[in-house]
Length: 503
Image (cartoon, rainbow, N blue to C red; front, side, top):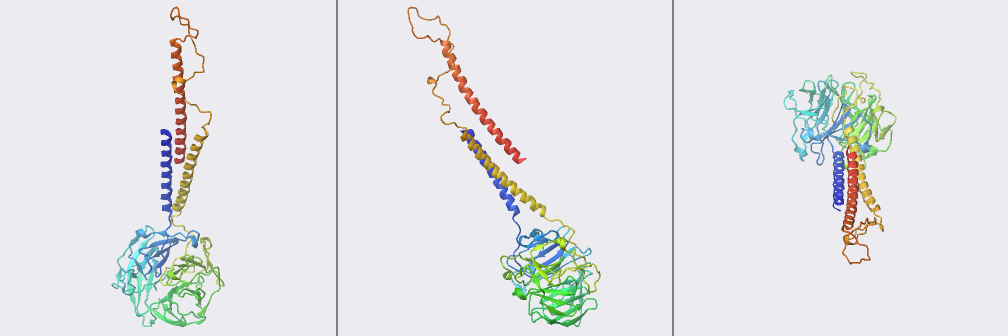
């Protein structure tokens, strides 16, 4: 009974250990799910879309990326969390771009601290850089003009030479940052319009930047800044002109001949427009697929053949929708809303407008910036945590199997122990004085008897009685030995079973 109790305790401890192992694996598998946000930055570097900051409840110092080198479904997207290494203060309304000497560094400029005082929020240190090669942040020393004020840096755009352009729509000055030399400069164009802060903006392939004022009136007038000659032009558009839409985004189409404007309104049927850059005519492009709710103050990047929309004002997003939207813009006659991203299908035409390189595939960030000077290369697979996820899944399955096997083995042991009891034929050990020995008693002649005494019953000598007692003790010992052997065999089988499981 004591040995049986020890075995039960052993099984319970083993099952507890397996359960704890399974819980630990499940905790490690818990995916990172970022909070909703708006006015964040989204920068595409080395097949990864890095998302930082934003204005929303409890965004904190969130910093994470989405791996675009592998296929995924937006309903089951993996967000790779890098918040633990983020040294940038919590903020919103910053500008970002890929730049630097080797065009492989993430630049974050300007923005306001996320301290629940949006009107008078202090400006964060102007420049922060992130190196994706070693996952490290730094605050480089810059030259040129001292302490440039970037109250709203979301209109930042970077050109083909690694120079970022910031214009807040109030002053005539355009502020630039050379991301290679780390030098700030002022441009003093006298023809700059006064159109406010809310603009959808993107770089065109002919070294011009288009600004579409979206917070005050409709988009009948657009403004084009020539970064080579430092001058402005206003263009009057026609067609189905979009209405006022603060917080809209703008990206360049894959052929370089159209600008796609998205969001800035709560009406999904009125959320997507296209401006032809040849005749400056607006139209509503034909779309298919399930139309999502519209987004405001989001970000949009062109990655391969997709316009990738990230986050936006949380209150406008349906609970069953992903924070990441995909619009296939490879067919100008019909765009397609889809949940499936496939990097192998990202073979797209180059823009046909004049550009520094005919092989460039352009990518832009609305109300922010990207570097279009490098082709989008989705064939290079970066390091990701897919192996960690696979290992965690396998570990979880193994833990479940071990738990099941342990429970099943305990059940079989209990069942076999009950089945081995043969009721009605069990051996009952009686008291010694009623013990019978079925072996024949080997009697011997005893000449030591009293004279003149007649005894009609057989006379049992003392040697016969001793032999009977020895046989009784041997039988009891054999039963005890047999019981001990059975228990030892069971223990060995149990130990061997668990040793094989944990090898």
